[in-house]
Length: 353
Image (cartoon, rainbow, N blue to C red; front, side, top):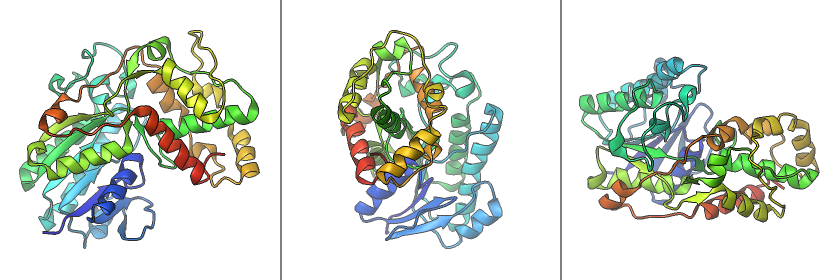
């Protein structure tokens, strides 16, 4: 049987990398988004996951064997996050159910599984690090859990296999994405270089001096492909990170060096990036015009609030990959190289000077 992937959230960081990999692997690929991007060899599916009627119409001729779900909509409260994001998963799987074609569903969530939702992010009683899949769920409402439960219920009903993927902060290209540290830091460093402002670390001492890890979008895509094709990975939840650990006091200088600027000394004071970049929209527009860049709207590139959330956590965040390793996934990606690859791509495609 021909493998036919439906990638949901295909314009996001994880989704775009997954589309790239599956196309390279020779799979038939349908890419679903509210505003999908046209691409040769890919079936674009424009659909609203919150509108079951239009969703069913959009998927009428789509019979995927594999579904890769990496979409969510941020809401003002966690109760609304649960209601909206669980409905998105449920509506999609309900729309696909009559075709009876789905063999595997992969759901991308993240480390908020262990850290808690934005309302309680990194607060209260947290599991010991490194985070391991066996630690299970926190005793708190979390839309990731609600999304998982929708997948589990549909799998029981329809008989497909599933996998859950929990990346740490993802490094990859996706314009207009709400959680995009790599591009945010690239834009911030570019502004510092152009204006002569100091390239200050915006986080807390625990992140500057503590150990952490991240996830390359390309590695995440390879992990998704592995679980979709390896029998030993079926019906399991997995952490997925690059495989290295680092301290931001080391990484910050490496990022600065790539852009040809100096990394400001960190004195322990917290200067959130959201405040640093609050008035930078006209600054970026001027930089973009002078350098002939393709995106003049700072808000389409940078999400300082999300970078602040990651770099403001009061604890070390490191993630155990033993479960994947034991089952056969042995790939690895140095995190500094992941940043460099992204920065080079953004420069090559004229998103940064």
